[in-house]
Image 1 (tube, rainbow, N blue to C red):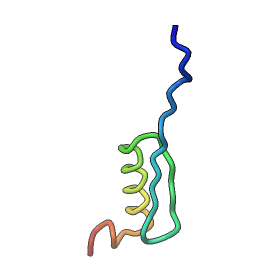
Image 2 (spheres, rainbow, N blue to C red; image 1 turned 135 degrees about the vertical axis):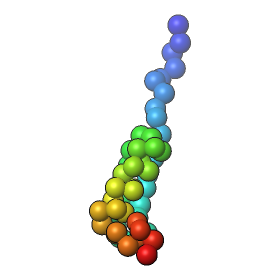
Image 3 (cartoon, rainbow, N blue to C red; image 1 turned 30 degrees about the vertical axis):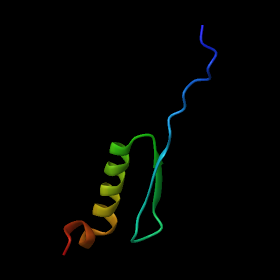
Image 4 (cartoon, rainbow, N blue to C red; image 1 turned 180 degrees about the vertical axis):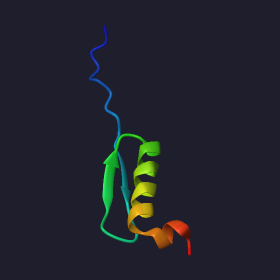
Length: 50
């Protein structure tokens, strides 16, 4: 029997260089989606790289 505590997943954090948006999630791929959704909705010129 193992008496080790359950393994905790590390949090992935993200922030926007264009505003005060921040997010915390449990996976990198989910953070990428959150960030891209934020950029597309709130900073369309950055999203389109115009």
